[in-house]
Image (cartoon, rainbow, N blue to C red; front, side, top):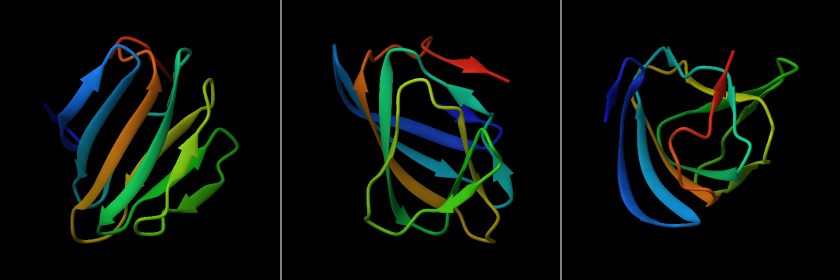
Amino acid sequence: MIRDWGYYEVLNEGPKYKVKKLVIYPDRTLSMQKHFKRSETWILVEGKCYIENEYGVSTELIPFKPYTISVGSWHRAYNKDNTPAEVIEIWDGESDENDIERQ
């Protein structure tokens, strides 16, 4: 699915999980969002990516080290590098794209 920040593709899914590949274009940011029925684990596999929380604190993802976002936690990802970032995103819980609130 193409978005203004890049694109994603669903690699696998079931009723209580989804695995996606996200490609975040250089100098792009996803919306600040939270989910009520799922947590997410992000694994950076290429490039650089940061996750910002609701307090404005950013964490740089370390390649191949899982980073978990809890249910109900505000977050957004961004790429301030000059190459695309590739992330594997694993949902644990409701696998519904509508489980999202944006700021």
